[in-house]
Amino acid sequence: MVFKLNNQLLSKIATGNGHGEDSPYFDGWKAYDSDPYHRTKNPNGVIQMGLAENQLCFDLVQEWIKNNPKASICTPEGAEEFKDIAIFQDYHGLSEFRTAVAKFMAKGRGDKVTFDPDRIVMSGGATGAHEMVTFCLADPGDAFLVPTPYYPGFDRDLRWRTGVQLIPVDCESSNNFEVTREALEYAYEMAQIDNIRVKGLLITNPSNPLGTILDRETLRSIVSFINEKNIHLVCDEIYAATVFTQPEFISIAEIIQETEEEGEECNLDLIHIVYSLSKDMGFPGFRVGIIYSYNDVVVNCARKMSSFGLVSTQTQHLLASMLSDEEFVERFITQNKKRLAKRYTDFSLGLAQAGIKCLKTSNAGLFVWMDLRRLLKDQTVEGETALWRIIINDVKLNVSPGSSFHCTEPGWFRVCFANMDNHTMDVALSRIRTFVLQNKEAMKPKKKLCWQGSLKLSFSSRIYDDFIMSPHSRPQSPMVRATT
Image (cartoon, rainbow, N blue to C red; front, top):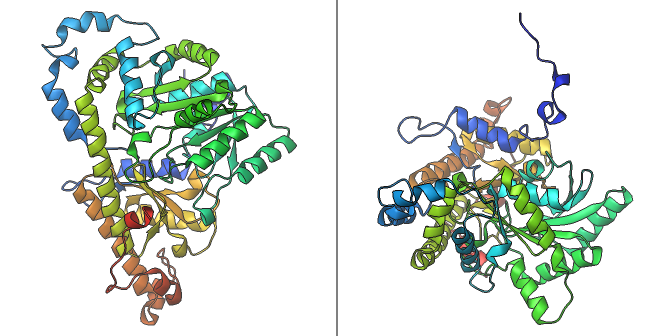
């Protein structure tokens, strides 16, 4: 007998699309998975530039592992501790792991602040950490304000299983997408009009996808805002140690410390930090997510909930040893910043030589916020999507369109640059230059008819002349502009 699947027998989560996989953000990953680029086996495949991975310092990690075999319980040198680590089940985690993570968090923030190991709660990556915090702070139907553009995964992490809403706080390119008090107030007031209870504000600092950091004045304004409204502040700081040039990163922990020293009122129970080792260390597969809350009730509740997504003790043991090595940590953080700075400079300069600009205030993260507004046939989300499909299908680059980050201005794209070797980056830049030159050829009168009905974009020579730099001019590196 053949049985038909009856969706009525399943939950709404199982049968719904709350995960958000129908977004172009995830569609780009699928395009890459079906035709992945390989230097020799598939040189015409799709290059993955939609995944924010940090692969620039694995040589340092591999060298440390070879020199410290006892750090792993799966080596002859470390097997002696195998039993104790294998049977450890306490959801507080290994004390040496929490201590090492606390010190690493401080080091990544310039040792300007300290973190209490007893406030560190583990989770299965930042994804699990965000969901866990949401469960602790809000009920189904409640909402969080989130400045745009923001990481597409938040729609999954904070909403899918919790029933919580996300309310975009629209930020604009006219001020480099800065978060303003006016924008926060407007989003909050609109939620009040719609009878939506706002329970918190989620900020990402450094920003994904912008690669920018929040300055001291903005952070102080945000702290003032959440205290006035009596709502929570969740600070995603998973890119804290990726800031590769001035100005330096300022953690919300530093702002809290300053307000206490100055005697200003601040309800610490409203402040929570989400962290992980996926970006700063480049270990997304280890699934190390961290919640650091100044609220005792949240710490206790989150710790109990962490039973659903603990970090394996084998991973804790290895990382406790690695992150306790101060010499290694210092070298890693220093080299990571240098290599990210060089990769950013090389990549953004390559884009500039093709006449493509990026957000000039970026100085952190594993990506650039690329401006292709002048290449849009129509200044709409549909026009952006059409361009994105050409880049995916014809140029064979998986870049992420701004609309998937809830950006209100069509034509911006996030492009990741730290998840590949130098050769792959050069191939990607070559494809971009070829694409731009093909569009230049399309504008010539004798070629005009050849492009009718084609998927290729065309635009006026006046726009192109304004947009494309002269081959005789020397482009200024966006890296230089970012520091001035």
